[in-house]
Image (tube, rainbow, N blue to C red; front, top):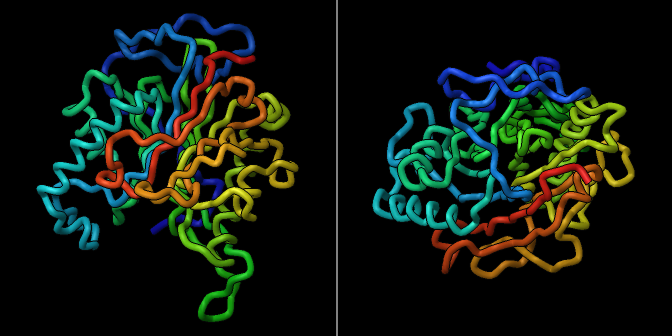
Length: 333
């Protein structure tokens, strides 16, 4: 049973390897003490390039070949094995084409599937670090894969959020923890002297006022946490929000996610694709942009390019979404 208490947000390690660790060099004065208390995996070397590619990709009902007895859904219980194996191969092709350092994936069955696929199909790509907050009884989860070391993870799975303007069957104000497992934040240690907080999300789908209010409430929760996380340092905070946000630029929920006026907290986000006309859904004939990599005001100077891309020919064979890729300079500017 989930606990409906935000203060009990779970903090997990970003990488679950049990290999022995080696100490990092002594941190500079003023460095993050949590990072300073961690170490690098043996043999790990940071990339020598000066850019980081961060992507989001909704993989549309992306499951494994096996029936999880705790999940009851026809797509997971009895998938078409041949079609699924083909999609797994297309996923590997898409990873090679995107060549992203960090990717937030949505609608995947879980971390185990993604670890298995990247290890078996694209071991050369170096996705050694994986973060997730999988739901135990549902197959649409968010998983982050990374070539770069990850730090502590905060999940909002047990937080209960209101749905403003809606009431339940007993005419009480509606509130829920449904889909909140699809929102978490993890620290990404991009270089020895550069890091950012990545919020990975798959927000509530659907049109109408109720779903808009639901997404806006998720935005309010995230911004409250970011404000607590960064406080007086919010203006300089390096934060990225990546995911299928199910929110179209210009809507109330997208405005809440950007928080341009600071009404929801001190961290304000920007849309690197604003005004470009690039669209991400549906992948065979894009009509809207539901998928986003948003950047905080503090990280915006480092953002040098952003694009919606078709990572394979006929991308609808893999997903009804197209990925979004953002390139950052890996140093504060």
